[in-house]
Image (cartoon, rainbow, N blue to C red):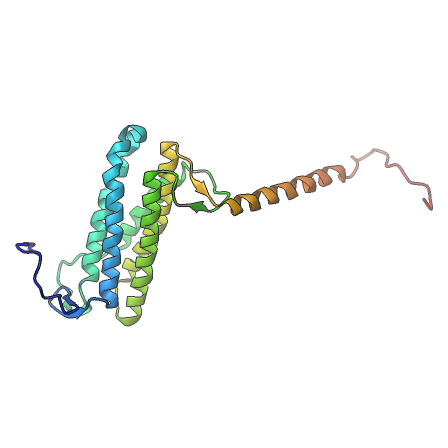
Length: 232
């Protein structure tokens, strides 16, 4: 597909309709437009993270190039995904890119790598704690919305199942990114206070229980067990 943009405004969308790939015109609030519009919004937030990233190159050290390349790839994949959503089933063409298991597999492998550096969570995280962390959480929430819109579109017309899997996996990926970035930069994560208090209460309840188990252990074999007088 040759891309050549000579003029941005066309006036053809002034009546509330726009063209999909192939020229089919649909309302601007149709599910398909909402779907790739949400993906476009998600790409914009990832672009903010990528724009701020060079300011953290020293602190990320040897992981900077790996992480920067990952964000670049994700942005390009999101653009590919938006293009796929902008193409109705009747207008697919030879050589058209479709999201598949390979893209999903890369996300999963990257999550596995990042999670090895993370401690288990004792509460739900709240967005914020650092600039990159906050924007990654925003990207995660936009990704979840994009997934919901894509599922709504799938109820109306067929779309690539692997596309749905990719968007679902990417939302998890963005969450893990937010935690990994905070850990690598030495920034504190905001945690849900009520979750922390619940964990603290559970820990406090477990301590007396463990102490009780220790005091109630049976005497060792061969030791004499004192007997209480009858009727006492």
